[in-house]
Length: 196
Image 1 (cartoon, rainbow, N blue to C red):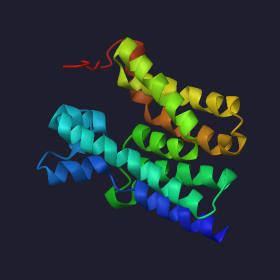
Image 2: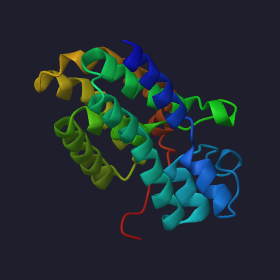
Image 3: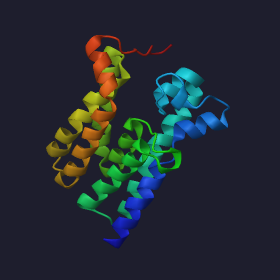
């Protein structure tokens, strides 16, 4: 339990390292919290800084979710506790200690953490996301559908230990996407241009 508690803290602090803000600062770009959608995430960095900056942000967000969970598992954290480590790194991204608790929506970090929990679920979630974004070109819709189906995927492969923490993660993710949901309903959500 002590090991798990240590990794809860490590995961939260890792999640609090905002890849978007750090990348923009290092590349001389505006703070993503003040530009575009005001969201410190890869999609907004793509708008304000281009594909390379967005890719760096995306990779950083995925790995800060993946690495703490992978390490926790290596050091013997299992079951529900490992699911809470995944939740902690996601919460760190959404409410980062180092950036006045003004974080992103957490999709990439959630994916990295989920992939470390179960690569099978991670692959299926990624396929779901790609399919939806290819069909409809809405990043937010793809993220919401992929996240919403994640608990079902966990049940189907009988990973019940992770279910409660991941359900809470999904609820927070939907809450963070509330403005996107409203825009999707109104038909005003921005689409991405694939292969452009």
